[in-house]
Length: 462
Image 1 (cartoon, rainbow, N blue to C red):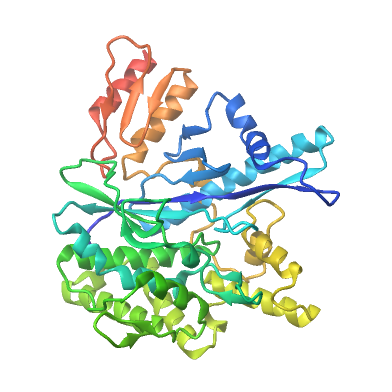
Image 2: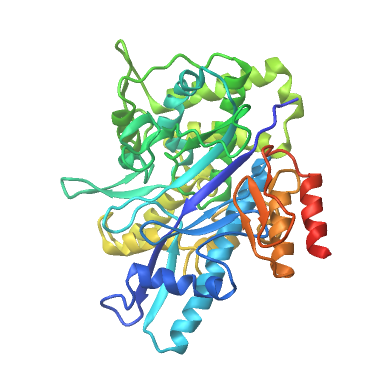
């Protein structure tokens, strides 16, 4: 049986209030964030709140709205809950825009699921994977660095990158140029590919959390799913004790930048001890290692249909980069979908990559409000979905039923419905100002049932 894992995604959104009359935005970022969260605050929640679907909604440093999904055990659940965050913010923006219009404010709020603003400031999309605690953790995850450096060729969001020479180029990734270290416990100061801060949100004797901050924010659902599924599959190998391809990059930070700019996937990446490899070769060897291990362990027979599709997409994406023919993945992988969109516009308009109209098109691709392109692209078949109809809407209201998030979500829902004061975080539940109650600590992220939580729920009913 394939080992089970709990996973989550934290996404920071870009935010702006654009003038509807042209010129200076009517609200600065802090004022825009306050307007966006107004209804949340009026409902009794704060700008740092856990929701009834198990997720966390908050306002991060720099006026970045952030949504952290509930703990999920399947890729399908995780993609649905990630999309639920988009729906939530889109609804908040729509309400805020109605309030602005009613007050006669000439502005419209936009939320961007991307990683760079116009000034070049970066904000993240962080993946979290529960892993078993072991003394050789750092050594083990270091073998995954070449995978993370080159994963952008199959899961990057695409980027119109203006170089120091003033020339705009299309690159695979928005985050590649923002990485400054390979592995580190820092998250903002050095901005590593893998963050090793030991914050397991579970039993620290058993677990730790692999925190990956190198990934782009994906719009296309299959790209989000592939990003997570490929990473999770390699973690299976690591925890099974399998040997990953012996690739040691001389300079991972230099390599990730080089890989981003070469759409052929043939950027020469220097190896420790001499020699070079390429992004295509790294990804192909990682995929081959996964398929071989899954066959050898008998996991292949138990693969869900969705995972089979994602492994196939992984291979097709590698082949598309290697061949230069991107048509076969242009509805599934963000950078390919965006590049096709950009090239169509350039053919129709005669614009070049540095044209401001293309920069606006790029932003529209990532805009999760009703001003964005996603809905129309999905309706027209230009973007494929991975989740089934209504999955994101259900995830907006209901936590995953097979993780700790079920307990947290149901506790929050009942406490709010019955108007109890409470305190909640990823592992703790507590009723405030209720005699005889203690904090319930939920150390097992896999557990969706707990008698202590049942007792808290009964106490609220009584």
